[in-house]
Amino acid sequence: MKLKLITIAVLVLLFSGVTIYGLAQEGLCPALVEEALNAIGDNCGDLGRNTACYGYNQVSATFSQDVPEGYFDEPADRADLTYLQTIQTAPL
Image 1 (spheres, rainbow, N blue to C red):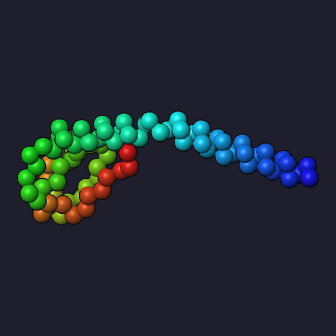
Image 2 (spheres, rainbow, N blue to C red; image 1 turned 90 degrees about the vertical axis):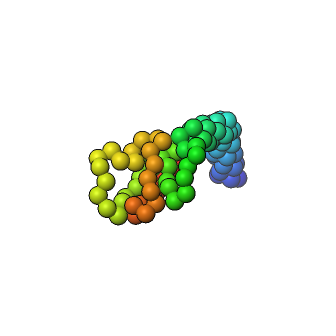
Image 3 (cartoon, helix red, strand yellow; image 1 turned 180 degrees about the vertical axis):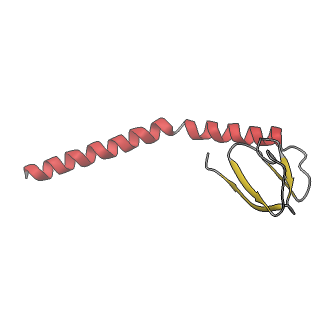
């Protein structure tokens, strides 16, 4: 009986900790998403067809041909899709 109570108490503490952590993070995600969407709008407005834009941070790309050092490394940089081999973004 004592073991059962201890187990229940531990589970309650664990779940309450997860709930508190989740509530603490609740306001962070929408603010971060809004910041990213605003940056994309500022950096990639009037984007042409068949073009990729480095809209926010942490974009990784490889190209099918040689490109200059620093090419497509900063927000607002643009690249023609015909030169892109892969493109990947990191999670926010």
